[in-house]
Length: 68
Image 1 (cartoon, rainbow, N blue to C red):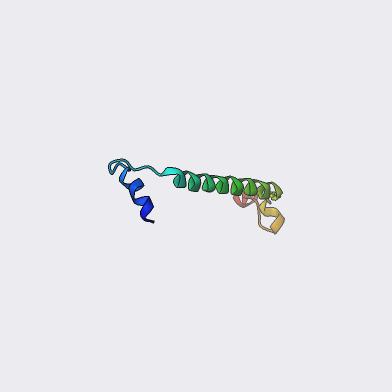
Image 2: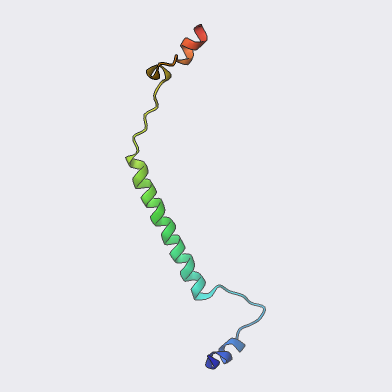
């Protein structure tokens, strides 16, 4: 561990950068979000949504409700 101390002295105290580790973490998170979005799109394509009108459930439609 003491052999890393000279490397730490070369770092400028006024300059902070994320470095390689920050880039790797960001890349992994970006890949995870991309995978989740791809999975979500695949699942959303499987959804078969057809809106039912109110008359199918025994409730009057808007036009029938306004008439009386």
